[in-house]
Image (cartoon, rainbow, N blue to C red; front, side, top):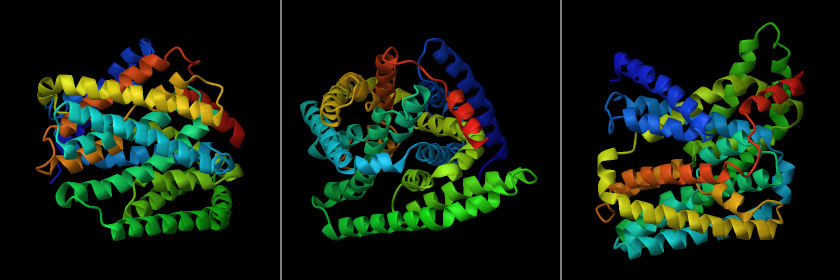
Length: 397
């Protein structure tokens, strides 16, 4: 049973420390995402041990990824992604395959087993949708050509990640993949997309227009409506075997026009709190003490993953004809995160996979975020999230 005192104490410790660390990181023009990760790592159960109610914190953190992806979906134009559809799929396959191959190769060179190496390759191949989305927002790149392509890649990667979560344990346990399971997953994906498209195109505009009539007298109704749309389709996504991020993003993406601007104005005030909780909770998964024994493999794998992402970035720039450097694209795709933790946790329970995989993944997350942030720091003008708030407010008015 959850202890109210322990949970409130945990929030009372984590949130102020996240604020202090984020102020320090902001002073050095580093992403606050890293500050949130470190706050969870330092004060979590594997650090100072001041925070123990991690499971409850993780439940709140799920809302963070839901609101972030719903927000990003509302910000983007589906017509742009539709126009780039086939190209985005090709770019994603190449980008994931390059990083996966490098990760597997480095795992074998470091003396890891074939199964562990396959998990390492998968963990490094999947970019963190949450981290990249936050970086693009903070740097004012979300609505750029690069931002649209990268977020399209993120959506396809999320589906790849779900597929890996399904098949990797089967490979580790049985040495083969059940084709029926893959076909069922694809069928569920088509069903999820169909339901979201039908709702977003036919019912959502009428529903949002009706609710907006009560905005002046009952503003809380508008807020609840905005939250319920993102949460409901995230729930539907989970029920069908996908991540909550997929359902939230697709729903936000397919609600357009004045309806999307209306919803944006409602969720902006609360999304940041849950995003902080999400990254803090990821930090609590990192076991600091075990990392000292894995410093060499962590550094080698992280370095290899970054190099692979930069190579993939060059390919993306050439194919998509982006007017940015391949280094900027590669470094933006460098951070790994939420799905990598899920894959690591799936592997850690198997006897054929290295037991410290979760902690190694946490360290690689931190390294990839740090290097990505430092590399991107001077590449473009930093744009604060408040500018999105102001522009969304002006659009609604």
